[in-house]
Length: 115
Length: 115
Picture 1 (tube, rainbow over the protein chains, first blue to last red):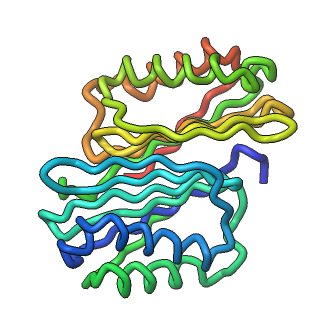
Picture 2: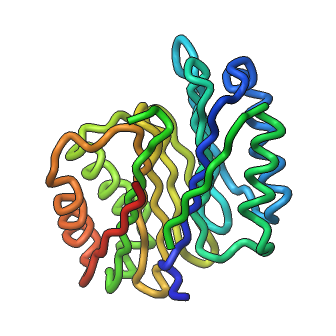
Picture 3: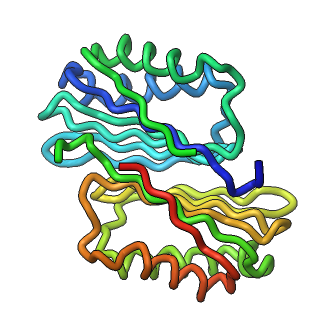
């Protein structure tokens, strides 16, 4: 695929534990697990805590970027990965959805993809 | 729309000037212009220069995030905006494509959208 023919994955998280979504270390831990599982390489990051609640984190990767945004007041969040190469594992979508469901105590994680 | 029903726009840039794509101030200027034109609010950012060339920038916004990645060796780049609200202007896609074409001396900017 041409270098700018990136893939975009969006994981929409619903019914998650508001306390976890507003707890920066918990959200960071979920991101770490997703990066570890997918074999992606972090090179820089930026984050912001919103008042009175909510957290956003953007991670620049060697393979493009990942970001997560949380809305504790609604029990929702999403994680998006944009990458210039396909994930190493065909199970990437399922594994990431399972990790987010588990680590954010979510009732549903749906995946959208732009290719 | 529910808070996690975010919109994703990807602007694929081709035929751009390699010198501009590898010049961090030029890429940042393009991002600034896109943010100004779209009325989005920057709250944090992270960037990385790749060796021997290439630059990535991720910007956390009050409205989610924007990122840009460049491949000077190919004359390509892409800019992606993920936002939890629709852009203020219906002309957002056309205006952003025109800005990127102009500021990066590109021959083509195509838009993909995930809703």
